[in-house]
Image (tube, rainbow, N blue to C red; front, side, top):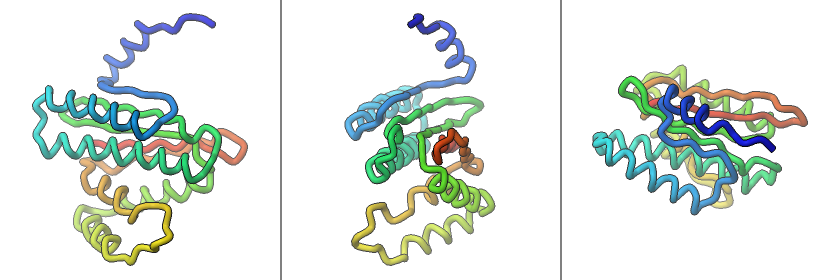
Length: 178
């Protein structure tokens, strides 16, 4: 096994303005530890409290969604997440991805694409509508508000990508700009 080119990786991080990058199995405690590091960084950058909260909330939503999917799907490799937070031109970008069953990924991309076609007022109305929906007491997922809330906070439409990797699986990634 050859030694990784850490300097090349560092240079790539600098070029892409990457502040935080993680790749590996995600757990509740790891989400918390990385979240603390992100909060401390945002605090040191003296970002407005509202913007810092939006960046942190996007990170939490994305990583918890991956962890939840990995737990409920039992798909091998689904617990391995890639998470990146970057900063450029006055905006923060939070991106995360993991392996999903292709059918699940297609449904998710379609849902995210539908949000991209909504303006702020329509997103607000969709959020309120979802908020009023009765919750199935046996549901294993949340109320479905997280994606809509991220779409509302994103300064550009969220970008979802699904890359077929064979055997009925794909790599799903979602990027949010704040």
